[in-house]
Amino acid sequence: MEFGRVWSRHQRTLLITMMMFKMGLLCTAAADTCLSSPCNNGATCVDHLEDYACLCPKGPVWYTGAYCDDLYDPCSLAPCTNCTSQPGTSAYTCHCPDGLTGLNCTEDVDECQSNPCEGARSNCVNGENSYSCLCPLGSGGEDCQGNVTTCSEETCQNGGTCMDIPDFGHRCQCAAGYHGMDCEENVDECSSEPCHNGAICKDRVDAYQCFCVPGFQGYHCDLDINECASQPCQNNGTCLDQVDHYGCDCAPGFKGEALLSYIWLGF
Ligand SMILES: *[C@@H]1O[C@H](CO)[C@@H](O)[C@H](O)[C@H]1NC(C)=O
Ligand SMILES: *[C@@H]1O[C@H](CO)[C@@H](O)[C@H](O)[C@H]1NC(C)=O
Ligand SMILES: *[C@@H]1O[C@H](CO)[C@@H](O)[C@H](O)[C@H]1NC(C)=O
Ligand SMILES: *[C@@H]1O[C@H](CO)[C@@H](O)[C@H](O)[C@H]1NC(C)=O
Image (cartoon, rainbow, N blue to C red; front, side, top):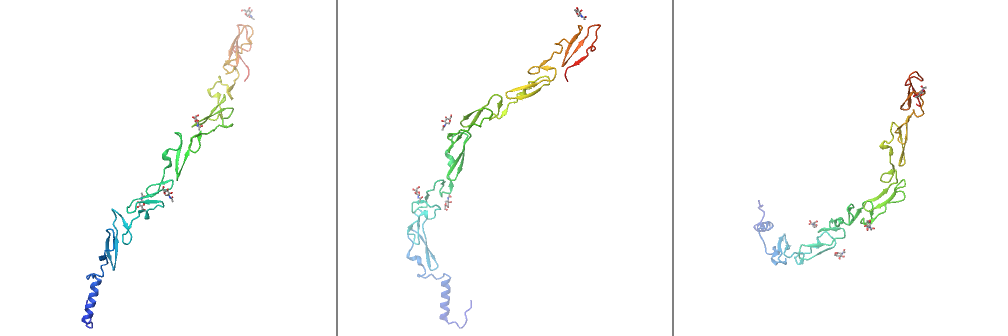
């Protein structure tokens, strides 16, 4: 640092004093504003430029304000609208609106926690300040507590009788020949293959009908028609019953339509 020769001794002294003051080397009584002890309740006073600041105590009793005169109200910074507190502490209580919980009322209440939906097979769905119940068939109402009638005139088809079953729904008592949840299916009585000897089975309601191939008869086509019944062989020839035809074993000395000739009936 070089001072010009033009500076007088007095001027140099003043300049150096001002610079030392700026650098904090000279603390004058006037600069220390904390000396007057402006902060209350045990607060710490901090000099700041030509001013001061009070650092208020945080506990056991909390204070606030420029001089730490006021009891600290923790609700002033609490993130909820309905807040109560004990001034001078850091603890606050948020009074949450319905459906919210937690220190700051930020958590959703699980309304399903109390199992409001009745019945083992009902499902609770949590919502915002609400819940809804998914009820099993046969029950209904807000909490699945009511029995719901699921039977209507049309529920069971083909003359079936409908019965409401709580916690299940309905059950159909089907008329003979029908089955299925709603008696919508005609039982296929042909599935047990009741018709014999190559007959065609036709499914009916609670019944079947066999259409026999030639040579058989009976409800199940299980009877071989005896084509010898009419005694077609003459002159003591022996009749041989076959399927859908007969043969004649002619006695010695006779011949007719030839030995074991076949007379076809049908086909
Ligand atoms: C705040 O909460 C209290 C206690 O739960 C209640 O009595 C009061 O009505 C609430 N005030 C408001 C404005 O919600
Ligand atoms: C409650 O809010 C305060 C202030 O915003 C925050 O510091 C604290 O972590 C929050 N607590 C919870 C449990 O949300
Ligand atoms: C529902 O049905 C069940 C069984 O039949 C019965 O015990 C219960 O009382 C009924 N509930 C209502 C609300 O009708
Ligand atoms: C058939 O047999 C009977 C008794 O065996 C006999 O009396 C009759 O003469 C026979 N008829 C012919 C045509 O051979």
